[in-house]
Structures are given as structure tokens and as C-alpha cells.
Length: 507
Length: 95
View 1 (spheres, rainbow over the protein chains, first blue to last red):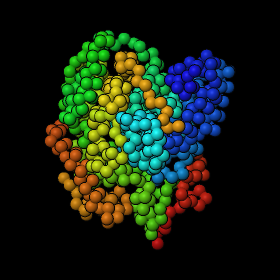
View 2: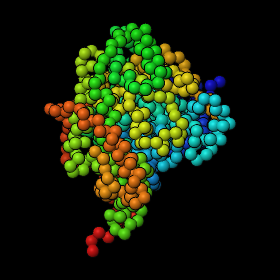
View 3: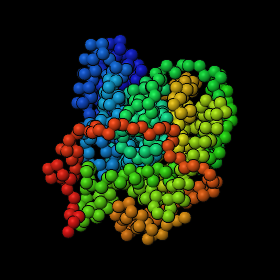
View 4: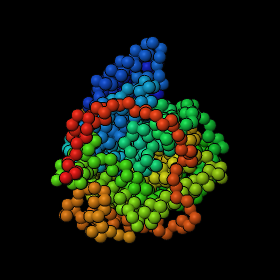
């Protein structure tokens, strides 16, 4: 018999609906899986009592015939989402002890629909990172292993504090991706500012979607870069992502940038024909030094979509190469402003000083990790008098050009764009941390354009690298046309065939 | 453009982040690596291009000017690292 935590979210939903399994049983199976997988470091806080209480309430609603679309389905929540009375620190030292008195709109939507919270998931500090190594709570290991590693060797490495040699799950939503890939939860909330949903999904053989800017409310999400941040799910297949996004999305009067438009039933888009859909292949994504296996994966993706009836056209997005540098002006600028609130007065850490000024400076020096300090300082610099026009205004103009590139392609009839999700497969923990910070930033080269233009982007596993590690493709859609992405991604998922997630070596 | 050590100290002060003397050289190096990375943006012709202000065209919404948060002062100060009654306390700022 299948272990209950090996169900997909859709299978679990159907098993609950047909009364084969109760929400409490399903939740207990996941709680046990989490306890056995602490070596991965995916969860920073486990909430088993709350989970079982929510599951019991779900079972009661099911018995009364009042089940919601996610009734009794246990999920994980990225530490970036405010959860009432529960640890919410965006994995930063500066938010020590913070327990919000309110619930984020996205998680409130999930609980409204019956989902069960298993705990809070590890992430890069304030979502700044591509490997989950900037977390105050330590790195997360991917359940995937480097080529040739035995379970024994992996367990020994996982038992060490720095987990060196194991693979990163990507970031910033590394805890979410690792937990989903290791079957610790049916799905997880994540967030994406430059690739933080799609890159970890690609690294772990899971599916992640960053919806259109404004599709999900940002209220109650710890802010990093407000014009780029967007919530989305990571799950084990395309259908599960569609189910979760439907519950997460929706208009929220508390976020003025959330869009007042009905949320479609995304699951209905799964299995829809893609015949005649026009798919753009942007030539600028064929970057210098791209590994041959990524190029081959991309070509296979093109063939799969063509075989399913799509029309493939080459397109040009000429400002692509400027997206990542422009991002590293816009995102730090917004971060330096958003993170000004962490001053040791209203919440979190306070480090004493001789006067209030020194108290601020000491608190922020100790409370923020090196990557966050670096980005705040870059942001302060590009916004400072004399540099604002040369850096920030110029970057925002380039953002207009990036968006215009996509608009031109869509105006020419392109329905969606296919690209690789990442320039490589997952790398090792500790492999890139001492290098130039820019080397880490290059992970987001294919994903960041989508945030700069506010578009929806989905990463779907499409094959394995020569070392047996997952590789993903990215689909980019028109604004608010997530449905087309789900239809196309299902075709890729079906064509790629089953990618077996790793067996649990950690327990 | 690149920053010198005096500028690193000035930025750190603007950002309200204490920086130790021995950390200034490598911070300078890291910040300059990022600034070198963004340098190529100078080559883009942005004449007549409007800077982006909203990534998805949307009209700013208005709401009635009414109190919507009834959390209460005790809830608001509950997470403060230092407080007295329903006040946040900070080091003395007025002599």
C-alpha cells in the first residue's frame, strides 16, 4: 500500500472525498515524515498540535458535508508568511521571537478552504538568496544526492551543521522545495521575487508557479521588493499546483496591488488541447556557456510541444541581458526601503548602544546576515543623492523596455514562451558561498525577466542531468493567463515521463 | 562607477548598519563587484523611455477613510523588545 505521504495533493483530496482516509490520518503520516526528516533542515518550526487540531476540524466539516476544496490537506508554509501566533521570521535573526497577531491573506485563504498547517519552512533570509544558505537557521539539504553518494555518506553529511557536500534545494524557497520533494507535505507556499519559486522547483524536480503580479495578495507576507514579490505554490505535479493556486489567489482589499478579477478553476485547464497555440522561443536565452544538456533539454521541450500541436516560433526579447543587472538595482533599492522598519523598537532583536542611533546600527549589524546587509547597502547607495537618476531611474526605464519586449511578442500572437528554468542543475552546499556574490545571482538569469515584467512563470521538471539531477523548463505567459501555462506544463509533464523523487535516505 | 572606503562607511551609516573597520575592505570589494555587474546598463539607450511605476497597469483604489484596524494597543506592542505599559521604549533621545 502507498504510504499516505506519497499521495499527490489531488490523490489525497480524492481519498478524503471518498472517505478512504481521514484528514487526521493523512496529517499524522506527514507529521511522522517530518520528524524523520529533520536532518534535511526543511522545517524551522513544526506545529503538530495545531495541525492535528485543524485536521480534526476538517474531519468534522467533511462529516457535515461542508468540505472546502483543500479540506484536510496538510501543507507547509514558507517562514515569510505571517501566521497568527506562530514563528514568522523570514528566517532572519532580526525578527527573533516575532509572533504576528494576524494572518497573511494567502494563508488565510488556504485555511478558509480547509488546508492544514504542518509548520514553517526554511528559506533564505528575507528571501535573498538562490541556495537557502543565507538562512539564520542554517542550510537546507535537497533530498537529491550528488552522483555516487550512498545513503550512509549523505546521512553523515546531513548530521553536520553546515551539511557541506549535499546539494542545495535552490532558493529562496528552499525549505518549501525540499519538503515537497521529500514528501513531507502535499504542497507548500513559496514566494518569488527573482526566481525564488521556479529555481528551487527546477532544482528539486517539483513544479512551481509564480503567478502574475497582483494575482495573490501580498498582505501579511514579509516584504522584500514590493514591485516584484509574488506568492505562489510549489507542489509535486502540475495539477497540484493548479489546485493550490486557485485557493491562494484572489482579490484582497488590504493589498492595493491585488487585482479585482475572478479566479478561474485552474485545474480545468489541465488536459486542455494546446493545438495551434503559438509558443515563442527567445533566441536571447541561448546564453554563452550554456551547458549542452540544458540546450538539449530545451530542444526536447520544443519537440514535445510541437508534437502536441503547438506552433513554434522564434522570437526576440532584445533587452533580456539587462534584466539581471537592472534587477540588482531595483530589488536592493526596494529592500533597503522595506527593511528600514527593522530598527529594534517594535519587534524582534534589539542590541544596545550608547544612544538610539548606535542602538539602530548595532541591532541591524547583528540582526541581518551578510547578504542582506550587502543588498541594503547597495540599495541605500543607488537611492542616495546624486546616484538616484543614474542607477534607480535608469533601471526603471530599462524595466519598461523589458516589459515592452514581451508585449511585442504577445502582440504578434505568441501565447506563451518556453525557456530553460535554470542555467544548471543543483550545486553543492558551500560551493558558491565564498565566491563573488554575482556568481550566485546568475542562477536567476532565466527567471528574473518575468518578475521585472510582472508576468506569470511556471517551472516544470523535464528531465535529468548527466549526474541524474532534475532539470526544469520554464513557461512564461501573458498577464493573468496562468491557465495556458497549466495546459502547456501538463503536456511537458506527460511527455517527460515520470521523474522518480529520491527514496528517503535521511531516516 | 566604484566606491572608495569612505563611501562604504557613508553608505553603511545611511543604511544604519554598524561596520567594523576590518570589514570595510571586503565590503568595498563586494559592493564594487555588484556595481561592476550593473555597469552595462549605462550602454542602453533610454532616451524618451518612461520609468516603470506599476508593473501591471492598475488604477489606484480608494477606500472610505475609516478605522479598519481594531487590534488594540496591547496587541501592537506585544512583540516589542522593550516596552512600558502600552509604550515602546527607546534609549533617551532628548537631553
